[in-house]
Image 1 (cartoon, rainbow, N blue to C red):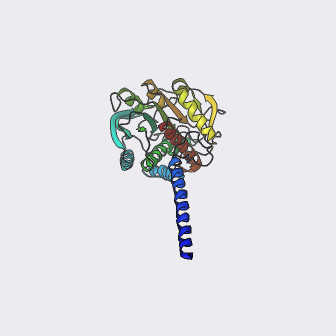
Image 2: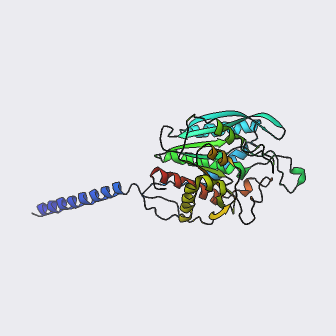
Image 3: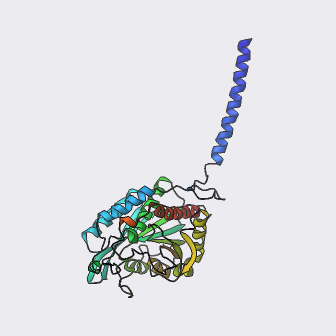
Length: 338
């Protein structure tokens, strides 16, 4: 009798356990699309998986670029960095195209330059374009030491930070597949114009806008990242971005502020900045520019075009925050919830 009672209890317990497991399983299925936003971001109304980016990897990526030396078109250091970007993006499963062209600036004539286009989910109809320039500046005309003004700078933030952000976003996508086509363009020959003049700036994006890597290429919108890694950075709303891509710029700034980053993404508006996004916009793709610019001083950061633009200006938090905001925007766009 005792044995039969024990068996009955066992059967009832097993039934209860089965029900509990079934409820948990259904709950897990219903909750698999939870919002895994980074610390500081409020829970999203629309459930979406948002992977976290890695600040240490971002910082290491900037260091890696600087290890090649000055990335000036036509130099061995430039070519070595190009090969690293290409191989890194291929390692993430991206389809990579190298768009070669000739660049002339200062006393350099017809240097070999390359736009690097890497695509994740290249056959997806819904596309977003991310971009940064990967070259560094040949002179440091703003340096306080006049004897150093004709020497090349390292470009840790002005070039290096944007490239690091793109590479980290691509890495995250390989580990967290996204229902979106994302094209990464590393523009070359952006940063060797003459201050106050119109020549030499944005040569890679000018070339791409006239000769796209795909004849009928288009994207819903684009984001340019330029100088996105220094301590104390501020990202105001730049005028060309507002003119061409206001809807997307406003959405991303609102997103960043909801995530708790209103100290970086401010609602202050500034004038037009000639940057790669200008020519992408003129090619018919609305693109906004996330660029460090102090609206109070009406100028770029103190290290801009000086030899202070080295690894010492890079701040892991700033670099992580900007990369996380862009990553979050992409995953929300993949769910049509941006």
